[in-house]
Length: 328
Image (cartoon, rainbow, N blue to C red):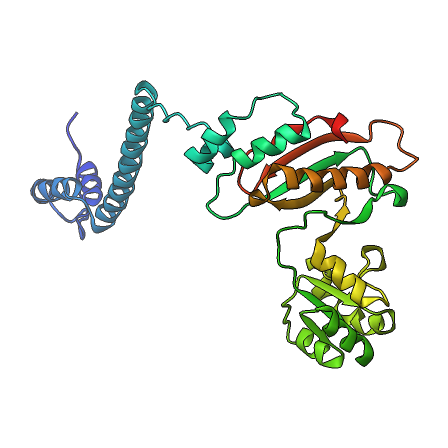
C-alpha cells in the first residue's frame, strides 16, 4: 500500500524533523526522512551521558561484587586446603619434675638412702638425717609432728615451752623491755639488749635485732601498739611462752639455754628445730625425746582418735624420714 502524504508527515515528525506539514511535497518529505534516518541510527547507537554514567556506576558495583566473590572463593579454597592438610602435632609436654629432681644430684643421692614406706626408730631416723644432709653449712634438724587435734578448740590448740637439753645450736639474742630496775637486772643476767622507753624508739624505726623479746607485766600495755610489727615474727611477748614475767633473769637464762616453744599450726602440725647436724645423733636424740615427752604430756583429754598421726625428721634441704608414731 502506497504511503500517503499524511503517513510521510507522521514519520518525519517521529524522526524529530520539525516544520513539516502538508505544504511540503511528498518528495521533500521523503528526502528529509532519508537524511534524518542515519542521524537517528547514530543517536540510538551512541550512549548518552546519562547512559554512560549509569553504565559506569553499574561497572563499579560489578567490579566490587567480583572482588568480593573472588575473596570468598579464595577463603573457601584456603579452608578446604587447611582441612586437607594434616595438623602439625604439638610437641609433647615435658612431665613435671618432682622436688627431688629439681633439687639436684645431691638430694637425689640422699633420697636413695631413705627406704620408701619404712617407719624408722627415732635413733635410726636421726642417724640417717645426719648422713643425708646436703648443704655445705651446718643444717638445722627439724621435727614435724602431725597430731590428731583441732586447733580451733582451745583445749586442743597445743602450745608448750621446753628447754632443749642439748640447746638449739643457735646463739640466741635476747632483748628485754622493762622498768629501770628490770633493765639493770636484765643486763646483769646477760641480755643482749635491755631498755625502757629508748627501746621503744628503736621499734618505732622498725629496728628488730633480737631473737627473743622478754617484757615485764607492768610495761606490756606500751607494747600493744607494736603487735603488728612483732606478732607476725613471733616476737610478741606472751605469758604462755614465758616471755612476760617478773623474773627476767630466769627467762633470759632459759632463752639462752635453748628454750623453744612447741605449738601446732592451723593444720595441727608442730614444726620444731631440735639442733644442728653438727650435734650428732646422740644430742639430737636427747632433744627429740624432750619434745616427745612434752607433746605426750600435753595430750588433750578430749581427743578420741589417734593423737599422733605422723612424725617426720629432716634437715634443711634434705629428704624427709618417717619416724614410727609409736616412738611418741
